[in-house]
Length: 174
Image 1 (spheres, helix red, strand yellow):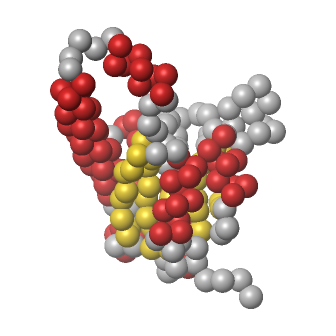
Image 2 (tube, rainbow, N blue to C red):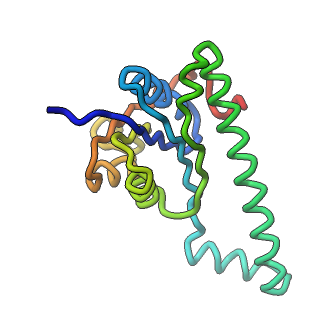
């Protein structure tokens, strides 16, 4: 017997057309009477990027930390607002699905690891995410994050190919 889907984690990188996969999460939520949790992971700077940032700055380390924290807080607020507005716009003709929105999460870390961690923490039954299939042979390989999630997940992962052509609504529109 197939387990019931009650909680869905929709992971997005906010790139062009990545909102396309959200429609699959919504459809799965409607069909299974499930809740959707939206997740965006902010990648941390690599140690070399961090070093370059510090070397090129003329501020004391404490001031840099304070500015970094303020800017991060502003960024998280903007992303939360964009995701909320996106969900509201996308679901305006379907308000009962808007009520299925469990949470909007913006966190720091490695995207694949955080997606897997949040899926476990929230006890999600399904992960929905898009893939851009970048690279020379894009039709053969998944994006690196979706591939890592797919190989390490202990629950079903629905990977949606993101169309290259513009769709009717994108995170960039908000």
